[in-house]
Length: 409
Image (cartoon, rainbow, N blue to C red; front, side, top):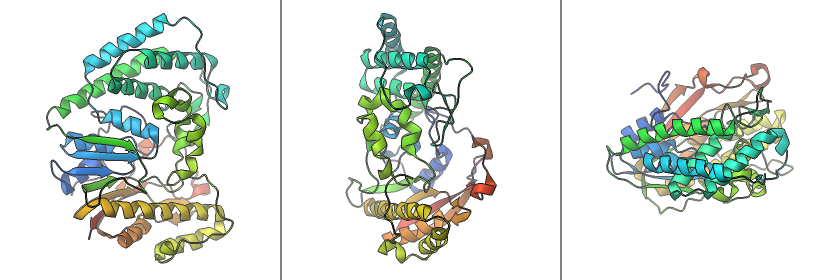
């Protein structure tokens, strides 16, 4: 059994570092699961694929893969990260983009959106709009254009964003004024150079394994469009319970990328309550426990403890586990008999009350026909924390992940 903490390991090899993403799963953990519980030529599913770590590792290890995510930006990032692109195509497209920028003499039409001038400097708005127009207009293949849209997104959604924001890759970012106005075009060129090296490395690795299929689509893990008994292994890391709001984390790229993502700014924000684990949405006045959850001891105990402290949080947690029950039912349906599902989860604390997510999901999995065979833990590296944490207010920090090895019976 390998050590699963991966302290000091390189998590940015191949295309894994193309774009920042909240709560990314280390690729070594995916590699462990694929190596132990699947074989070359198997089909791997990640129904909540995020930035595509499972798809990249599946490709590198010669497995077919399918990824779904409710978030259209996640789908774009995952698709680009798992699709080898010729560096010659990238070089030619970059030259076309730069020529397009030189030709643009008119003042760009900067998109209007709420709090625009709060989040962006006027010059940054102009330069981002000019760059987006050039990416849309320059000649290149569809997959190469997707690559450059991910470059564009990474300028905004990063630890050192061109937006007036700090920790924007997580969902609770804060306004922050730059000392100097960010050089959008200069940063774009730096990002392209770095991402070209990463994509070139990924492409070289892919030449060492047989050609396999990768599907990446916008989809809902609670209603998978896959046949029964059709996948050999499921690996996924579900969203934390009410801890992340992906629409808030991603919304600042929508004014320029809404066409490529197929959703308007308003529609994107309006979908927030539909995300698994979302904090948003209307709740009934009284808590009415789902009959399927009321039979689960761990789940009902948590709700009973949390309700007196915060009825609002109790309703959120109830909705999270009700939604995860639907996800697990779908996972059990599409998984082949006797095959495995590997789920990476992290318990949390709300109002200093422990939420044993791993234990509750195990209960839900058992009721869906997935039996727990093994359970491992790994420590989340403190070096990857970006913001201070007030233990006195929130309780013990989430620093231990559980790897649940489930088998379809």
